[in-house]
Length: 106
Image (tube, rainbow, N blue to C red):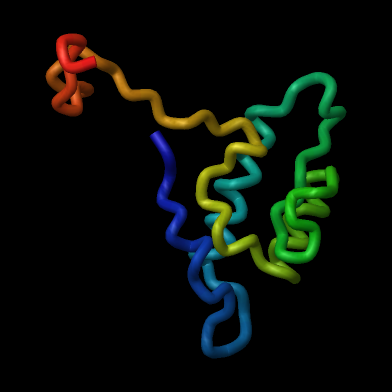
């Protein structure tokens, strides 16, 4: 199940020019997600999805947090596939996963 990612597309500062709690919580959620999916070969580094790095650079999670605070996250990055999120899987042949297709129509 994916978490609420609406914070990605929202303005990250409040009227007092402070980061919103929603944005900070969203960054925390993203970092937990990415860290939980690290592999041994990643050596503790994750891609930085800030608007400046664009997922091109691997950084320590604390540096990623700082970059996300300073530069914001890429507005379109709501499916965290470069951080281990898999595409949703659709089951077939069950009432909850059947999208109206069956093997006879193929």
